[in-house]
Length: 207
Image (cartoon, rainbow, N blue to C red):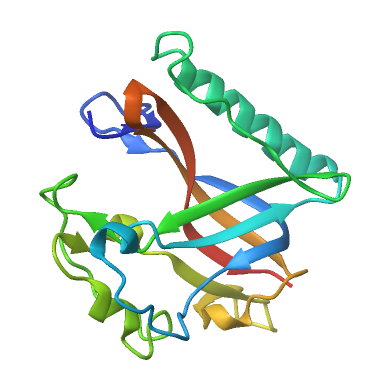
């Protein structure tokens, strides 16, 4: 396969669902849209590696450390489908003396790798100057798998229920408390190796 996915078959093998993990933490590092400058003559082979990414830490809190343990357990699950030494170790990041996790998603997919990928428009808040749109050349496509949604939690006010509103990615700052929705994907590497990726699919500003 071109990728390996973590799925849940609780509703039967005919109705598999991809597992989405929710991780709450503090942003310690980020590289989020929109792009402010158009890269000079970037070939499509380079553009495909452009990512939207965050690093989250919990500053040692128990809840975040439970999320870290879950990442490790999921990596162990992936390792069981490969021969020994094929899957790269999962590398935990750090923020000072505290654990942190890196979560990211590419802006583009290659049609060569995914011939059935359907082009999806960039949200106006993600690509207001159409820089990314103009980079989608050759076999590059911005697909549903590349679409990261950005939300802001609006607290309950009287009879108005709590809700998640679509928001501008520029609102996210270092030190903000957020919740990331994460998929886990095994990707092939050169030389017959593989790596588990924590893929960002949504980010919500909590505080």
